[in-house]
Length: 88
Image (cartoon, rainbow, N blue to C red; front, side):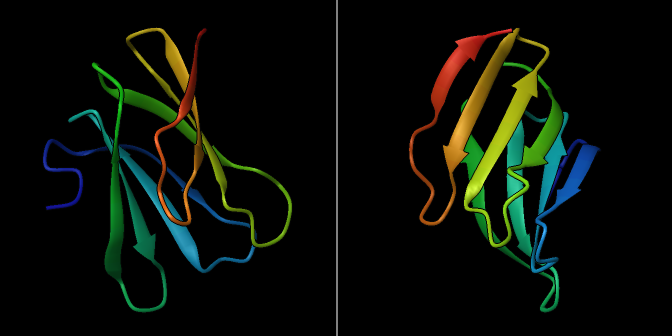
């Protein structure tokens, strides 16, 4: 299930077609807003994901995530790829 331990934060892509739902379970789910179904599950962080944000350009395929583990990740989400990472 999406956010099995509960959702910590949500972001909606600028075109309002996709939402990113971050969870206390360390995952980020990409969800088709209109069809209400999961598109992908992004997993990298070793602690709860505390923030998600899509790049502000229309139709953006980039998503930034941050976590309680002190890392940030930049995802190319369509198709999902291993993120570029750094320490916050």
